[in-house]
Length: 296
Image (cartoon, rainbow, N blue to C red; front, side, top):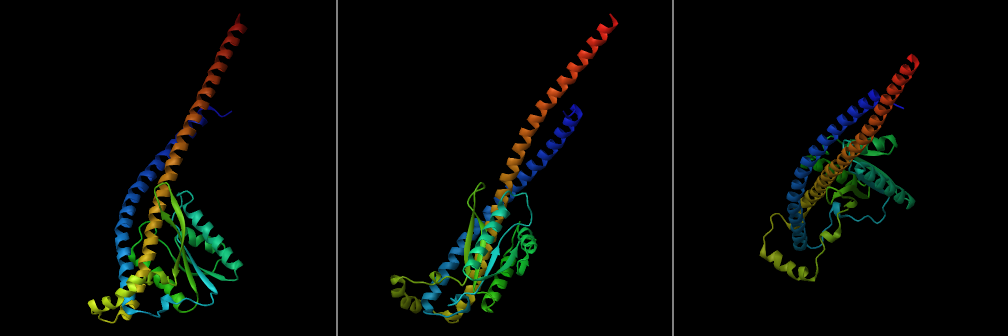
């Protein structure tokens, strides 16, 4: 049985750990509020971008652009798992990597080859450890991603797609639902879905009117060619923001659970220490009584 002093030292150690986890929980909560604000600001922009592209595509009619090219034969798929740069966030990183590796096995069973684009130190290190073919890596910004980071990722993905090195690009990331819930999401980034440009019957009837109501300079096809890369960047940026908010929510929940577990451990150790102290006192009383009896 451990001595009272040993148990006291362990209690002090657990209390210090609980202070750290509580501090990390508060920091994660503050970062989560900021991340939620950025997502809410991003959503109207993304929706407006979608409407703008749909409107221009209706005015331009049928278009053939590299980012819209649907390959008849898909040979290589680029998988982009979005993880964090740090751990201590529960299953946040593990569930993205687990889904990505499951997707790889599914694609390989269909006879396709897989390349990887590592986003986040945790994902990058796992892919390197498993000796996966990396077509690029982007680390050091997952806590607070900037639009320039999304541009770099989107540019690299578009470069691999348009050059023919890959035929599809799939993002895997945690979509933010709440501080307690993050949903692993697979999103096909490239080729850009034709549904984005699809027009219903009412839109087709209004296409001629749209072309007549507005004068496009330059031509709608050229405008669309410039808008599609921006749309691609906005989709990557939105995924980065969702992932950042999910990471802070997962870390806040994990640190809260760690603080709770530390409190329960302190209670058990305190009870154990009291029992050890009582045993020591009982032993001392027995020794005093035995000594007194020996003197009689």
